[in-house]
Length: 156
Image (cartoon, rainbow, N blue to C red; front, side, top):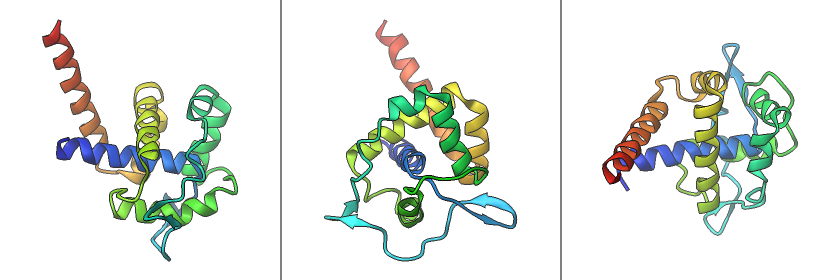
């Protein structure tokens, strides 16, 4: 897997972990991911799998549910109790490129990222301003999507 693919996978993982149990703080009045505080919750060297079975398809299919997660991410709405766990994990996940994420968390992150970029670009744009102001991961996603499309066309 290329460096671009790995970086995109890492960002996707961070997004899905965030959507599963979000918690943000505000810095200078703007929503911002929390700073790393203590050691994250780890089990056998990976993040706790407690929320790996969250039904992402249900969240993505139900506008109300997804809106609630997005509002939580933006610090404009309440978060579920799961946000306490995220506050421990998210800063470390970002800092370490999600090296402690499970494969299931990485897969879910890709699913959520693709859905947001392809189907909810306005929401993605707002989240991107908070978590990836340079747009690095969107560009990598679009490039990887372009490469995939080129491969499909050349296979035809």
